[in-house]
Length: 164
Figure 1 (tube, rainbow, N blue to C red):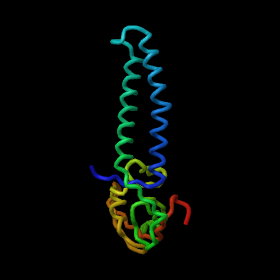
Figure 2 (cartoon, one colour):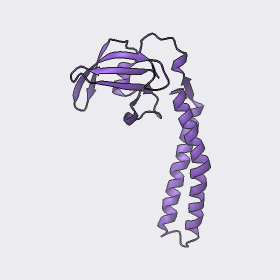
Figure 3 (cartoon, rainbow, N blue to C red):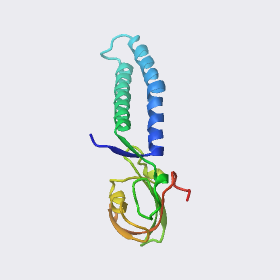
Figure 4 (cartoon, rainbow, N blue to C red):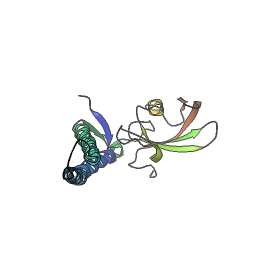
C-alpha cells in the first residue's frame, strides 16, 4: 500500500466530499430507491435502475476517498524551508518561451488535480518535468500541439496560487 501525497487543502477537500457523500448524497439515493421500488415491477423500472447505478457510484467513491485518506501523506509546503526548488505542493510561475505568456500552476495529488484551476497532477507530463527543477531552469514538455519550452520564473511554497 503506497502512501498517496496530498496537500493540506486537498485533504480538507477530500474530507468535505466524503462528508457530503455520506450525509447528503447517500440518504438522498436511499430515498430515491425506496420511491422507485414503490412504483412496482423492478425489471422495467428505469428510475430504480438509475438510482441503483447512482448508489453504486456513490459507494465506490466513498470507498475510494476512505482509501486515499488512509494512505495520505499530507505535505504542508508552508512548513518547508524555501529553496526555490519545485516540489510536491509548490506553486510555480512558468514563462512560455515561445509566446512570452506566464502561467501559474500548483503541483498536487491525483484527487486534487484540476487544470481549470491550474492544479496539475505531479505525475502528469508537466508535473514530472517540473519536480526537482529550480527557479530559472528551462524545461521541455511534450504536448498534443508539440514540444513546449518553459522557464521557471518563480517557485512559492504557499497554500494557494495567488499568495507569495
